[in-house]
Amino acid sequence: MYNFQYNQNPHNEDKYNQNGNKNSNFTSGNRSNSTKVIVAVIIAVLSLIIVLGACIGCYIGGKNSALNDNMKEDLAVANEVYSLIKDYYYIDISKDEFNKWASIGLANTMDKYSNLYLSNAAPSMQFGISIKSDAYDNHIITEISHSSNSSYPTPAEEVLGTIEGSTEQVHLERGDILISVDGKSVVGLNTDILNSEQFLGKAGVLDSIELVVKKSNGKLAKFRLKKSVFNTKEASYLNIGNGIGYIKLKSFTGTAANDFKECVKLFKENGNKKLIFDLRDNGGGSTEILSVIASYIIHDNNGKSNGLGIIKLESKKTQEISTYTAKGNNWLGLNSDGSINSDYKLAVLVNENSASASEALLGAIKYYCGEATIIGSPTYGKGIAQQTFELNSTKDFVLSMTIGYFYVPVEGGKWVSYHGQSMMPSEEQYTIEKFSNVLDFTANDSDGKVIYPNYYNNDITKEKAMILAMSVLNK
Image (tube, rainbow, N blue to C red; front, side, top):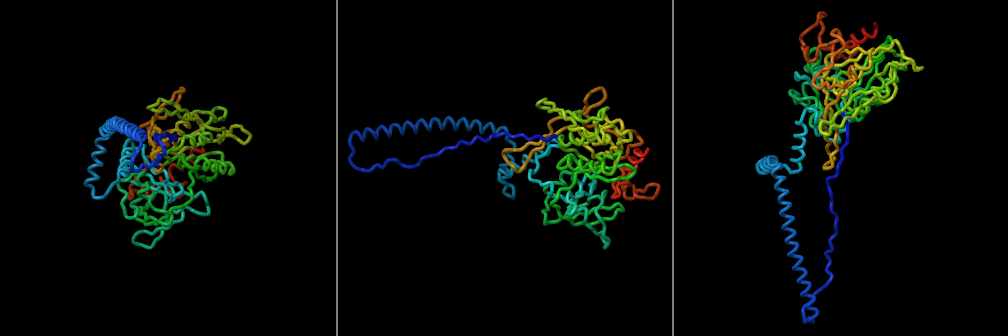
């Protein structure tokens, strides 16, 4: 979530020219004494240069040898592994390939948030779906994304699939459970792997992938999707009615700030006075985008947002502390004349996949916004921050690495870390059980309906969290 570009230049290139042209030609025959003396002097000088060169070469060679020995000692295991791979592995692996994959392996196992990933992975090359994996090995389609260009819908918006064993056609929907991709089971895979270049990322614009999902009725359905060349919106708006507007924020990345501003514009144009702000399944992103969006949500007693502290980031190694604040006075609780709207209310939706920047903003909302009600399941509990490092050794990858903790404001002017601790809904009556705990395709509620569409449903107003939010805002 903490974006920082780090550049250094370890490459010092010595540039030189060599002149190989001969300046003199020697022929056989009688020479004068002076000529013989000159030749003798030249031979003596050349001999001295050769001797000195040999000595210097031995010194430098010995020094480099010592350096190489130290490097070999430092990387003894890596060098031995590569040597064995080179001698015995059935496929040839170059040293460059070994360096690349060894680095990826290390970066991706330091902790579950750090990783080395392809820098040329284009965010516009998307299928229009969001997938979240839970602790129970369920891979849930949590969002059917809308294209930023209405003339070209995302693949997920328009695709039709068929129920296995029949000709019945169905749409891809929120809450569908991903079973396989191109015939490969997704059992045991996490969200990052599913979205990697080697899995969902492998299809090009003209290629397609086959998804098999389990629908809410327990039946399997098969879909074939191509990638879209258009960005999907990171924020979307829905006019609920009765003065209530709904804004869903998928992440704090990419075009999120501008997409959110567009939603705010629609919120105001529709005369909305109350807001349902949906941070469910939002895994975080940029602190810069967080600062912009926060200015519309948090406020002081005078309705001002600009400069209010949201989070503090502390680098564990450098001890550097950076404070991020709201940028701008854009609070949605203000009337057009700048006065405070007494009818303004806020309901914030969160779940177990709300993490990082989402939790940072939620902490600020809890601290600044007395009018807010938090609804949903306890949040993820991620209070550590990552930096993004550009590499000089290659432009193919960038390194995202955990560097420290972030802190949110609490009563008494203190700042605390919630890492490893969930942020909770406002009251017990607004707490919703985790989706992963109720994934039972055979269990029914008292009305005889399948339970889990109450969590993810194409008609979002029928979701349990939305029903609670509307009841709060309509009081």
